[in-house]
Image (tube, rainbow, N blue to C red; front, side):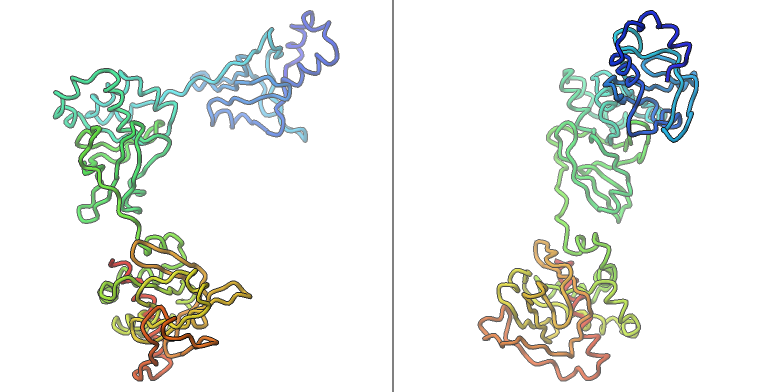
Length: 437
């Protein structure tokens, strides 16, 4: 809002304006639908916003002088609040074509001083500035810079010194990932990340848990997390060239990786990851289908599980695993099928059309078709009791059964507790096989 003195200063220039023209001038001082406070401007540094009258405003905070201007006009009264919103007093009236025309926010310029302070990336920074890639990084921040150190550049000086300006620019861009900050924790969590740099180079960023180190296309990352307003830089010990021989795509995620991402199957994932006997069994039986209970299902039988040793646990989980891969659609097409588990018990897998659900014995499938290259996982809401037998409404002919002929439950399953343990084995066993493969 212009002060009285501001209006008095242009009285002669606006006294012949019509009511509509005066209204238009006033609307050029109103931002609809937002309370822009002084702290908002300080935090942003500069804001570009349109007014109700269509005039663009550049609201700029000068940190050095602690002043705020609107299209170059000083703001002197701040945050006069009321039920209307907020008012900021300015020293001049914004009249398009006369005074207060749009002043854009200054272009952002990244500050590379955190990298310079490391003392061993002078060649990298020189190339970034000489090729104009500093402007590219500033315009696309935040970025991730995969920065070869001075020793790395020195080792290929005969190649780099022979590059033209565009070739040097392309080289620098091959070490820049635009628009995202990749933290070391991201790589550790994922194990491997595939990215494409601004120069079009495919890179695989891997975490080696044995050596506790990160590499990019096989090049070791020495300096991690050099952060600044540009994003982050990770210092490397070699230069990435166009035909980098070290690129090996990340392995496709296993069903265990995919299930883990849901956050609802941590119990069965931990069984698969930590039980070596279970991993051996899964590896032995080949491609499998796992009916895996979710965390709530395992919590409901936690006291029984606590009494099971490793061998018993494998047996329990084995009652949730069948050989071969069976999708939800196959079950829907068949209607009902009896499958034999890897511990020689059986499960009934049936599609109930009226409810549009698939049941595994009396457990409901709540997460179907989590599949990798070899096996498949279906999340269920209950731990299967391998001692219970369920039949299809109409017993299918042996030729319709996708697995070997149905066999009765083993006579060694005597108590409900032991039957329960057998059913738990199914989930783990299936998971292990798929994981091991």
